[in-house]
Image 1 (tube, one colour):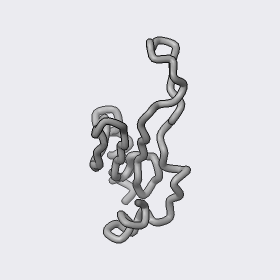
Image 2 (cartoon, rainbow, N blue to C red):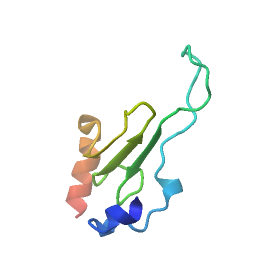
Image 3 (cartoon, rainbow, N blue to C red):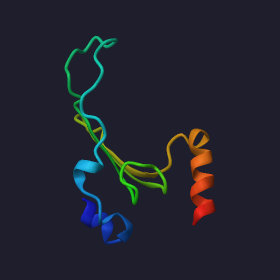
Image 4 (tube, one colour):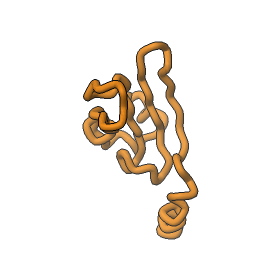
Length: 90
């Protein structure tokens, strides 16, 4: 998938899949479902790897026809200072 997206956005070609996936093991302390692994696969594909600066592509693959692909920036209000610093440097 990295190479297919990379045809349109060459900034992400240098990434390796292992650096883009989001935690597969989940916290089961407060959940009734005690399975140790999340049944979904999540990855953020961007120029900075998992880091949301600059914005990137988000892949979510889950059983039951709940998969999607999108892009953008998550929790902008928390990252506004990071965004400001990034834009100031570029």
